[in-house]
Length: 354
Image: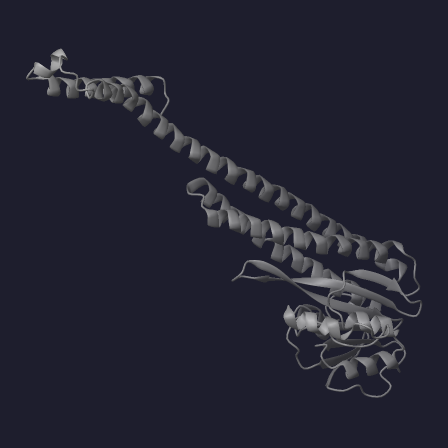
């Protein structure tokens, strides 16, 4: 976080569009994959620098440029110049703390989405920004880190599975966003598993660590919810706003992923309600536990009230108390005290006070 703050401070006072990578994650080597395909042809090329005329795309060919790693600012700037990308777009790409958004620049669309990653050790959700530039015959994707999230799509392109090789870059964009949203389903399945474990702790033996775990889970669901709501806006704009870059035939597919993101947000709302209920359950459990403790202490105190009275009464040591001269006075008093205690316990049991 300190490293991220220093990078943000470097941008203070600089003109808009100044390119500085401000990500929090470790900087990795920038790699570029160039995938060209149509119904009959498919080629992949891995490059480490921007080659000339990347924007010169043969007719009927769809070009997908996938950039992994954003630390090489010069390389991304060169790529932006070839495709005539606005400096503010490049600035947003290099600042991977943007909220998901959709912007129409007439000749291309700029879209920012977020992927989710689950950290098993800390039981927290981490997110990564992926930016897309959609043009008439190309798609550029920018990933902050190297990830295999798009491997299924690359395999479909390679094996010519489905209609992806016969469709344009807008369909490719849809498939990539669809993979990201489907990945949400997989990751959100971890939440009910954690909820189940915490509920067992709540029923068996709630502790302060249980409360901390509930608060952490609550914080994570709120963070994911803040991420998903703008994602719904992005998909909604893709679906509803008219643009020459998205084919009308694609609308039915966009409606499908909108339904998916809507279902995910509903699931998350349900999980959040359960977590809030768990918090109430914890407080009720602790209150019930405290009531049990107070009940036991009250019963003990009540039993000792008459016993304490007898002990205090015969502890006055007045000279002419008749019981003092009786040889059996002490054992009789002890027996009386025990009988009183037993009778009171029997009475409490009949009343079901414990």
